[in-house]
Length: 368
Image 1 (cartoon, rainbow, N blue to C red):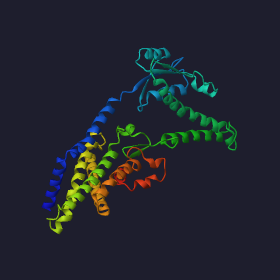
Image 2: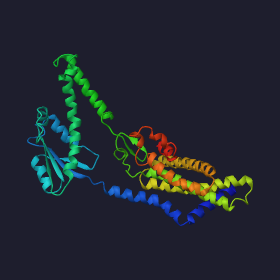
Image 3: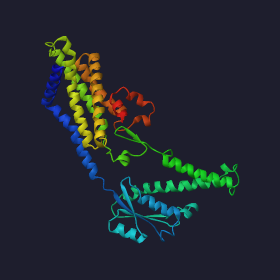
Image 4: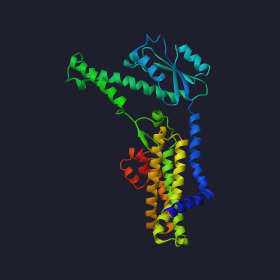
């Protein structure tokens, strides 16, 4: 056992002396650290003023007040909406460039929408040479639709012919059905079952962007780390095959040959796992707390052992180090495409996740 450990550390020393290998080990953590700093510097959101125009907030309709409040309470996205007391204040904010643009919401917004008066119900003021207005309009419309669609559904259940079998629009049964429809709308909308998209970051699926829930960055550190460890294991298997051809293990007894070969193969995998751990730390993708870091380390250890076992099997299948080396691009590209490194293709192409099962990073990313 002592000799196996010695062979492992000697192999690590040999790899660290190779010119390109230490650079590869440092590349991923440095990239994660640099991109993480760039993302943190880009967290400044575009300020946008918003108000209920033409009267006080108390005089405005429920829809006008709620739309302004929902915009101001948004904690996600690139826009930072804030409330102003009047339309003139919105103009002043935009003119002084304290805000890139501003919205003045008509106090009778709900009434005008019910009467199909679409024009000038929400007025937009933009500063010169800015594109924030057209970009933020989608966000405003999203919040408006979320609120007004609820009212439209209730009106449809109350007055629509499709529900005439329940009773007349004035009947208690029809009113109860309208109230139930409003509750179901809230349930489905808040629960994510209505026009909802799932965003995949770092191999994790969530109903909302991962950055919104946990503050994790969009740079797929975990996915790239998984592919990196697998690639380094394949590279180690290629060099192991060359060592075997050169007769490096012939002086060893037959009992030590297999353990020492596995030790040599494990060296680049272990070093790449250490690099991946620091990349997760630099990219702020580690789970919080000591227990979270220990869980990450244990997952990397298990994944590293799995990589050693799989590439050792592949080495014996292909026999020739050159043939095995030719498979590395295939495994890299396949892992990046079919595993949830950047996106989870299985969410929009059913069945494609079955192809991802052929690549080892799929299982590591599935653990999280």
